[in-house]
Image (tube, rainbow, N blue to C red; front, top):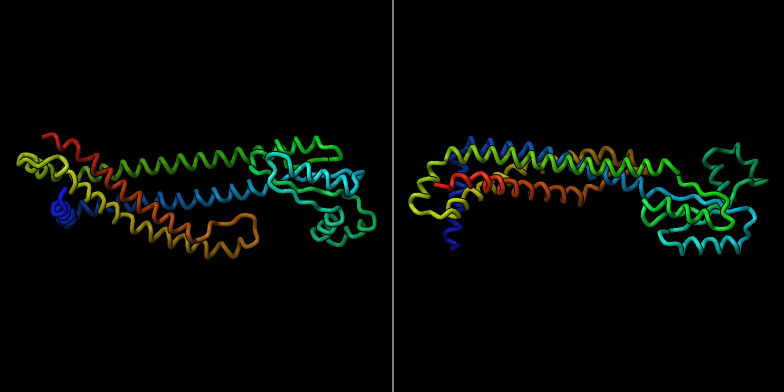
Length: 294
């Protein structure tokens, strides 16, 4: 296609937006509302996904070493655990450190135990993948001089199931919103095209090719998607800025954290923009097909 022809299509698509101002407003409004819903839902689901990842990554195996094991044996056990497949990190804590931490947590009432420490030396182990926690714990329990292994058996499996279900439900809802947006916007653009069907018929009768007719409408869809994404981007960015500004100080030092404002909000903004343009182009392309059969 010649550059002059393409320039004409761009010019005509912009003029058409002005000539059909009410339909343009309706289409842009439909894009705006649906993309705003999608944007807010993406913010929520991405942060819930981060919380789920943080909870999974916080899971660790607490391994108690028998009192009979001497320093040499403890070192052997540590090397054995580190060499096991599925183990990411191993941290050793002496029984003295365990008692000190216990006193710090519960107060000086426990300080009497410091004269006769009843605790065990402990290894804290993290699996390379949270889902392998149970498998790794089972293998560690088989090592000689391991007194006990705790990792929240039963509760961990339920936690992982809940998190996976939440991720799947969130993905399905986002896809459902996108398809709803595409359907709504496609129908809105279809109404615009129906109002101009005589214009399309005349162009076809004078010899215009399908693509010559189609391109201005596709460009209009692109403009509608672009215009419809501006308000959602502004509102979603402002909303997330307010939420992070309010929540970050309150969540400081806590296990649950929100995604950082940047670059996350830029990524969401680009996603909304791309979705708006794609949905506008797709809606125009699908809506004009039946009117090309003259």
